[in-house]
Structures are given as structure tokens and as C-alpha cells.
Image (cartoon, rainbow, N blue to C red; front, side):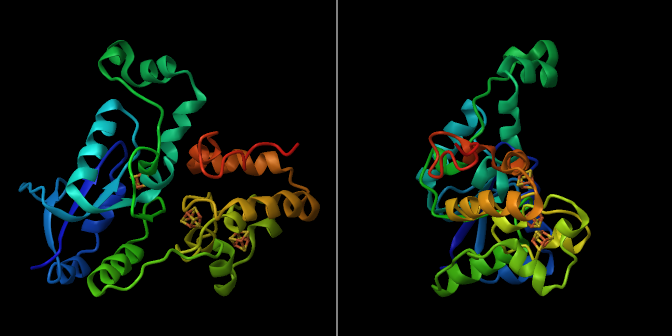
Length: 257
Ligand code: SF4
Ligand code: SF4
Ligand code: SF4
């Protein structure tokens, strides 16, 4: 019997789910090895006996919280896909305003009909088995994950910074142009696509960890004259939740004492 997989969305643009549909021919090839049993973006049937459930979006409303607990019960393996699901992502930007203010900005007089909570990654609410980060997630990484799952191979995210891939491509470093790039602190795996196309890395694949942040505290000010606070501000675009006091790497983005 083929493994039964499902794709779900919480609060998000659903771009990571759409990235799966964009696989086109590769998705058709994949369908030879798995059975998709629940995918609102791509089919009308619904089934709840699920081997691997992929979820994009952050937990950002009471309904999201209820939904992710239900999905956890129905999925033998639960995989967070994309920055929203892995980090909270851009949804966490709302924490920079009082809740009533951002709700009224979005919903106007109807704000009271749309309850909200703080935005959190899935792992803040339920056990998550794997994470495929990025905004959107990297399609090739998704395919690699599914192949590993089908063949019983262990799946691991890269443990290097984006700079490693960027240097291999021979890109001009954005720091040489006086720009602020999050590549040294961010997990590789996207083939440094932003610097490769002339932009800076914004850190959508998440922080490499407390060691990388500690190194950045020393290197950025000394080598580039950039105060670490400016780096921390930029990292909050996707990673504000990582700055949360209850998080595993709590405090890494706080100003040094
Ligand atoms: S990670 Fe990015 S592309 Fe994926 S759902 Fe969130 S905002 Fe959309
Ligand atoms: S452009 Fe960014 S990712 Fe590339 S080497 Fe420089 S700091 Fe690293
Ligand atoms: S270069 Fe940085 S911002 Fe761009 S996709 Fe990679 S991790 Fe995300």
C-alpha cells in the first residue's frame, strides 16, 4: 500500500502548498509512489488516515490551534513546510502592534468577528517531526524529503550557512556593496537564490543557531562596522518568534549586555 500523504494550510499565503502543485511533472512522478488523500488546494476528496501530513502557515488564531491539534492526531508524521510553519514567519510581524490595532487595520469595524492569538510556529503547539523551511519552502528539498521517506533514508537539513552556497556560486558578497545580508546566520539549502539574483538574504530559512549568532555579534561590528542590533532587527522579518523568551534559543537576538 502506498504511503498516504496530505497537505494542509493554517494562517499563511498558502504559497508553500502551491509550490507542491508547481512541481507539475515531478509531482506526477511522485504520485506513482504515494497517495495524496487530503489537499484542499488540489482536490475535493478528504480522508483522515494519514501517514505524512505537510502543513504550511503559522498558528495565529484559535481555529489554527484547534486545527493543528486535530492534524497531529491524524498524521503519523507531521512536517512543517515553510517559514510560517517552521518559524512563525512574517505572521509574527503583527506582534509589533497592539492586537486591536492590527485587527482593526485589517478588518475595520468587523474586527471583533476575527479572533486572533500571537503567531507561533507549529512546534510551539504540537510535536513536529520534520521542518522544511523557507519562504516559500524549497521544492527540491520537499522532493528529497519524500524520497527519503519512501526509501527509509534519514533526512537532514543542511547545517551550513547560506554563505557556503553563495561562495560556491561566485556571487559578489553584498557586504562588499555596503548592504546587510543575513546569509552568515541563515541555514543553507536554497542555493543562495537571493544573492544569486542580486538581493540580500533576509533569513527566511531560519537561524543556524545560537553559536552562529554569537559569532555574528563579534564579527559584524568588528569587520563591517555594523552594530548587532541592526542585524537583529532584520532577522525579525521571519524570525521574530525565535526572539521569544519561551523559545529554545531564547534571547539570542537580544542586545548584548
Ligand atoms: S512561508 Fe512564505 S510562501 Fe510559505 S506560506 Fe508562509 S508566507 Fe507563504
Ligand atoms: S552575499 Fe550574503 S550570503 Fe553571499 S557570501 Fe555575502 S553575506 Fe554570505
Ligand atoms: S537567500 Fe536567504 S532569504 Fe533568500 S531564500 Fe535563501 S534563506 Fe531565504
